[in-house]
Image (cartoon, rainbow, N blue to C red):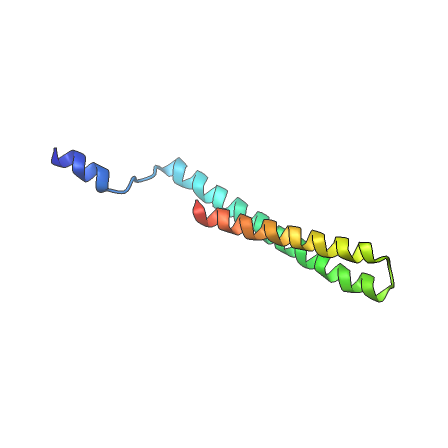
Length: 84
């Protein structure tokens, strides 16, 4: 009976491949988040450039919207990598 209680309270140790796969998934999520963050900064940089060139206002709004969307994806991917 005591071994069952100890097994229930002890943390589950992961095997070699399981640990490797978890690490690969975490790196994938972190790299994806970094790519989305860089793309968000690029789109956010495009907004003032469009503003200075007197383009249509909807193009500026579209650049800002895409930047916020990519920033949201970056944050969610970083959070997902921390949950693994």
